[in-house]
Length: 194
Image (cartoon, rainbow, N blue to C red; front, top):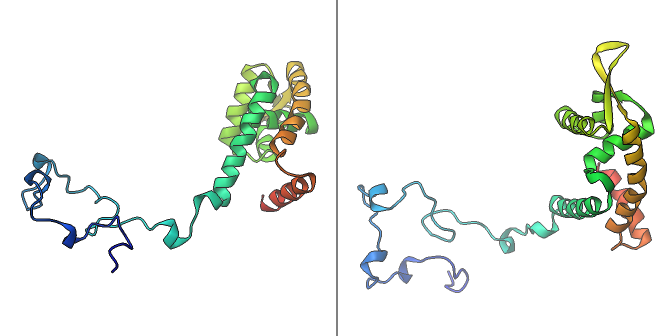
C-alpha cells in the first residue's frame, strides 16, 4: 500500500525502537487500570489494531447533502424567524394548535392532536401550557363525560388574530432566498413528502 494514501494510519514500520520509554504502553496480561490503560477503550481512529471510520471520500455520504439534515436546518431557520415575529412567545406547535381550533372550532384533544400531526403526550403538554396562559379552555364533552373538548378563550382568539398576519410574514421571510416559482415548487414537493 502506498504510504501517502492513508497518512493518518499508524504502520508497524513507522514505529521506531528509539521511542522514549514513557510512550510505550504495557499491553501484557497485567495491564489494566492500575497502569493507566483501559482495556475496553476503542483504539483511536486510524489505528491498525482496531476499526476506523470510513471517510466521506470512501463511502460518498455527505451530511450536508442529506434530506434530514437539510430539513432540520431549514426548520431551525423557520423557528428562529417564527420566534422573532410571532407575538406572545407562542411556539410553532402552540400556534398550530390555536390556528386549527380557530379554523375548525372546538374539538377533542385526540382529534386536535391528529389534526396537527402531534402525538397524544405532546398535544396534552401544549394544551396544558396554553390553558395555564388562559389562551385555551377545556370542557367536558356533554356526549362523552370521559372526554374533554378544547376551545379558544377570548384571550386566545385575540392572540391568534394578532399572530396570523405575522405568521404569513414568517413564511415569506423563510422562503425569501427562493424565487416565486421556486417557492411554489418547494412547497409542492414538501407536501408530497409528508
